[in-house]
Amino acid sequence: MRQTEVMVIGGGPAGLSAAVEAASLGCQVMVVDSDLKLGGQLIKQTHKFFGSKEEHAGTRGYEIANILFRELEENKDRIQVLSNTTAVGYYKEDGVVSCVTGEDEYFRVKPQRVIMATGAQEKMIPFPNNDLPGVYGAGAVQTLMNVYGVLPGKRVLMVGAGNIGLIVSYQLKQAGVDIAGIVEFMPHVGGYWVHAAKVRRLGIPIYLRHTIVEALGERYVTGAVIQAVGEKGGLAGEPKKVDCDVICMAVGLTPTCELLWQAGCEMVFVPELCGYVAKRDNQMRTSVPTIWVAGDAAGIEEASSAMVEGRVAGLNAARSTGHVTDTEFDARSSLYWKRLSDLRAGPVGEKIRYGISQACCGSWEV
Amino acid sequence: MEMDMLFNSGILTGERPGAEKPPQELWETKQNGLVIIECPQRIPCNPCHTSCPTGAVLPFEDINDTPRIDYTKCTGCTMCVAKCPGLACFVVDLTYGGADEALMKLPYEMLPVPEVGSEVECLNRYGEAVSKGKVIRVMEPWKDKTKVVHVAVPKSLVMDIRAIRVVK
Image (tube, rainbow over all chains, first blue to last red; front, top):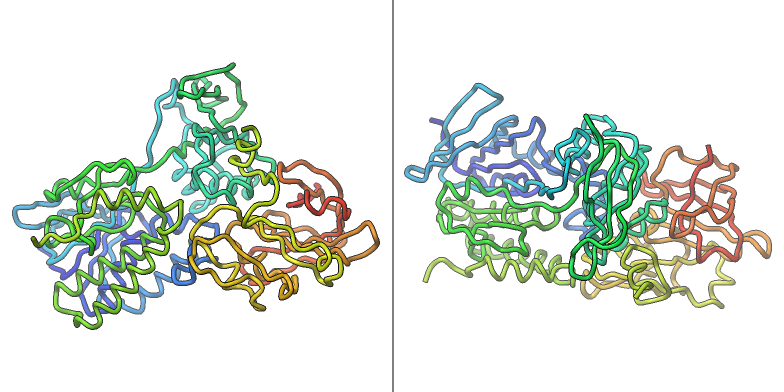
């Protein structure tokens, strides 16, 4: 049985931030990540981030990952990193986490504290032939293209005009791939307006109030059928055939929360946070006192806020293991919460603010 | 309604807070040009302000504010053009060249990088080629792969042209 003071599950923006925060305060930290390389979605993000200087606004996502990697390196005496390692089970009877490295090395860890930064999974929508080769999640397209340098196809229909759909369309265009168009069910783009303007001026059409109704092809995608939707969401107008060899699905994410369920954390379904999330207090602690949550696992949001939530979780794990003075804790905590509240203050943060109000219990001590 | 849908799909449909034109008189005479920022949605983002060396992009009270500009301080330096994550800043120099000419300094993140002296297609907000333009300079202000391409364009199209495409 391996031991660690703080175990961070997930090495994306939230998990890495949590790990460096806790380690820089003196904790022994173990980070496990199921991917071959740390960084989560950050390493696929070739666009510059929004936010403020503190969250590295204006810096490309993969560069932000490099900044976090440098911080890991600075704290390497206290951080053990296990990539290609999946945390597959949490045993609430004794707080043991079981892990598998690769496909054969199985081991158990008994951490004193756990930070769940397990991120999110992509959603899918039902339509005929949606299992044909050529129907991709946007994350897979980004992995192929930006991590492995492989083009997914020649001409793409993007489904969903949230930030991911808009950004991946832009990245595809940068890679020389043709975009047949972006369909969006809502009467407005879901992502930032400036991202939409950026793809439109490259000649990529955005069809609002449209959806995909069918993928075409026998053995792989050779096209798609799209159709307008009416005021009440039903199909309206003539179906239109679109030539494409890739259908890229960017229709939203949902928090990855299996381990939180296994741990017996009190869970709540919050549509604004895109699925089931752990109830948490105002320091990101779940109903299980030794478990914190951060990042998309706590509710789908931006990487900028995930990084700050990671800091909050790491700081709290460090305090609960006696590594932080009250003065230091208060100083850092108020700084992080100020940054989170700034990031969530505007109209695009409204949904998040409401969602958090549904998931946050204030304090577990009554 | 139709205009709303157009705006909602990322096409600017007229001036609004966060997407305003510089004052004409100053603009006509300002060498090196003035910035036009087209950022009409309140989002948590402020690098246009933090990257501005002259204080022309005013401080944000709330990081979600849309940008406000003191045009008397803008030098057309393009630091914001290259920093903006939304590629929403453009510099237009109306004093450049002949009476019918203007210089636009546009953000560019595509390949190939245009060659100085070459002719490129100038694209409007829909991505339609509306004219040809001559590449005068290619800069990379932050050395971070975002180029700023200086392109000579017809003066009458400075409120239409927002991107370029290299002609193969």
